[in-house]
Length: 326
Image (cartoon, rainbow, N blue to C red; front, side, top):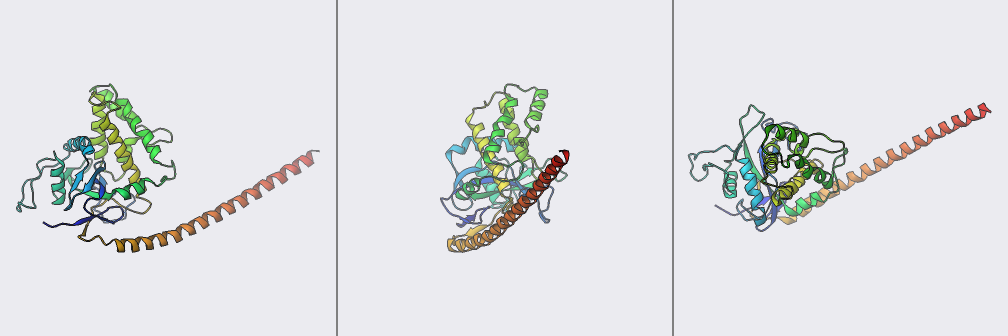
């Protein structure tokens, strides 16, 4: 069946055997054919799982880290409600049956053969294909290391993290009472000054709402019925991974990256070509960044000059009024 490397969805750089990666399930949008101009990284495809840690294990396989098991089991259990079973097709080797997604192996096989399908909510299009993407761990950490993104409010990792766990607190100890559950969801998604409700990072325009409704929704139910507490390790792991995902999606807007399936990069990694390409990109970006900084400095100087003139006129007017009063 062959052996090949893959490509990092963010950087395009090769991913070889043993490389640390994040693997994320993404679903094609029910609202866009992917043929127009997009506003957001999640317009054409959007994440439907948190990022799982693992190492690339050749031929499109990712060996997940042992510490991811409980999180993966919870996520796959949550996604089972939107999974559409697929029967065996004409080609028994590639048109594989996907009766369920109980195991990561089944999910990987389904993604490799293009046989993973999820239901759509809030759309006349009943289903959409699902695939998975890989992002190099070093690239992931590089993106997370950027100080902030956005203008108002300025979003940092801490900004997102502060509102994340807080959004689950309304569900503590309320049981299965439907009225209280609805009220708790309203509290979790209620707008607060200078804060974005955590579930809404995964329910914006273009998103499929699966993370918000199925994954975060099931976590809320687990807290409500006492299966989890606010200190449960799997809850903390889920929240931490989703915080990183939310921040990463926001960061992707700056260099104009989008969630989308990637190609393989063949059997050779060609790092020399990668180095040349990115050196050229850095040179281009450096020139533009310097031009922008110079323009901002010019605007700041002009603003300072205008303000000084206004203050001088006010002082002159005030002095004249005082002289006249005498």
